[in-house]
Image (cartoon, rainbow, N blue to C red; front, top):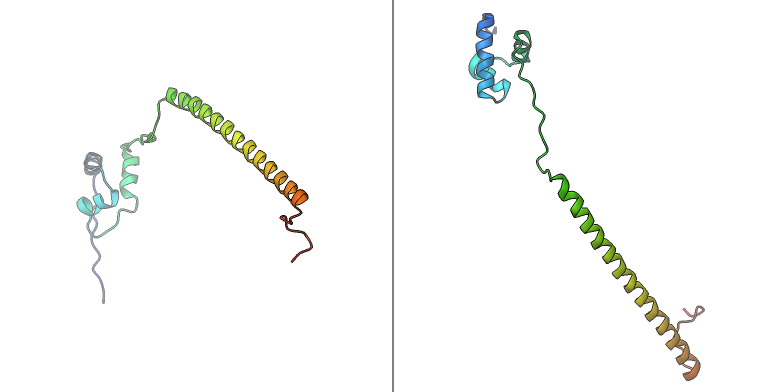
Amino acid sequence: MRTKKRKWTRLSDEEKKRLIELYHSRGGCKDEFWRQFIDKGSRNQGRLLRWMRQLGLEKKRVPRKPLNLRPMGSKKKGKKDSDQALTARIKELEKQLEDSRLKEEAYRRMIQIAEKDLKIDIQKKSDTK
């Protein structure tokens, strides 16, 4: 079974230019534009871009800017505030650590005194199972 080959007619430079200008004005995907306006049965395969380069109508790419930009000054102020908050938090944690060490020492001394004066075994011995 044979399939019919389509007869491709070459487009003039003026037709190519008109189609490229139409593509630029509409935007979107090159393949969709190709199927809709030029040839429904074939694929673009870079022809549209090749025409743009040949005719000097290639659209210049504009670099995108990041979405979440902060003003330059706000970052520095926020950093100072966060540095102060962090140093305050560190001091608070160091104070809590010192308090817990003092409690540990107090409990250890209480156990030693109770074992010595009352002769009660409170701490676990290393040789017991």
